Image (cartoon, rainbow, N blue to C red; front, top):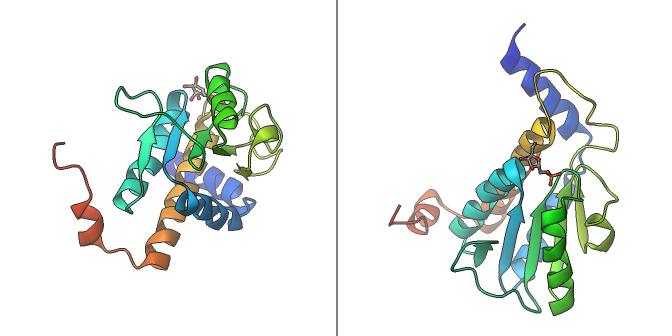
Length: 178
Ligand SMILES: O=P(O)(O)OC[C@H]1O[C@](O)(CO)[C@@H](O)[C@@H]1O
């Protein structure tokens, strides 16, 4: 068995039924926001970090939830949560706080309805409701995490082309204390 091909085939199956127009809707909310706050749990958090870094390289004001220097979210800001289930208990207080202060909420999830999705301004559903059967070799949230990573990389490519961002310009915004 070709395990790399197996993974790529699964990601393609999921992304083929994902609504790609949601990428533009997501980017529009980021561009309209004061600052964008991003988070998730576990491997979903790691995927969200990939996206956050590229938004910084694209010139946006972005914070990861939970860093000691992360400021308060306020009206006009945007909260983006990556959560396959849309119900991870540790993230729900962030949803409540964002709503309380008048920030907008985007949930990137494999479910179109969940505790988070049901109160979101935008749900970016990766795949469809039946796109994530148990697959031996891609345990737990693996299918969601990797297909979300590719979806968000696609969104960044869309942004780069739309805004004419350059390699040099993005590199200049990359951390220089890394
Ligand atoms: O994406 P969800 O549903 O919020 O779940 C996050 C959980 O999934 C995992 O990423 C495992 O796949 C865990 O690390 C984490 O606890």
